Length: 261
Image: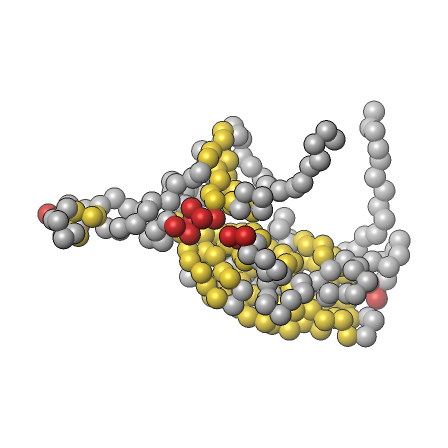
């Protein structure tokens, strides 16, 4: 016996039957910075169609669709946050080879105007992203993009900060930011949950891990005391902690819980 039942309050057919969507292509937030705080439903398809809805009743009406914009690339993920120094909420759109941040403004009462604020080209094909006040920064959110070859790239609004390669990487897993511990959490191919503090990522070397070569192979650098440093000098990235899950993680979300409830 179920303790509760659900009822459909509002529904809409987003696009044509040929359009496809990923699990990260849905975002609910006050993306147009409405003074009343009303949230909007944002969807993005792999065909590059971006739509913004504002349900106003139990049934879908044409006026509920505030924006329908065709973008140049497939949309992999949508996130709303404080991605600009100008304040307010912006929309971050992740494409396979780019990260684009848009500003949405209410024009009249029936549609939105979209403006591109900035874009970052990605040298590695993107898988997913997460965001948050990395490093304890206040009033703004940074974005971390994970690629299909295990690279984490951090962007501080319009500026690129750094990139790091995850050790022992095989396939990308879900990505989440934990604000109280200032950590980024993901899962690996060994069915483990692993955590990296932002300071650990920032202090580590940015080179892709590879074994050092011997002098006979033409590799290896020598320091002033004659000791071999190997291919890459710097602090190797290691997870701060790991936990065995025993199965694949589909999604990771952070939340706040009240003790005793």
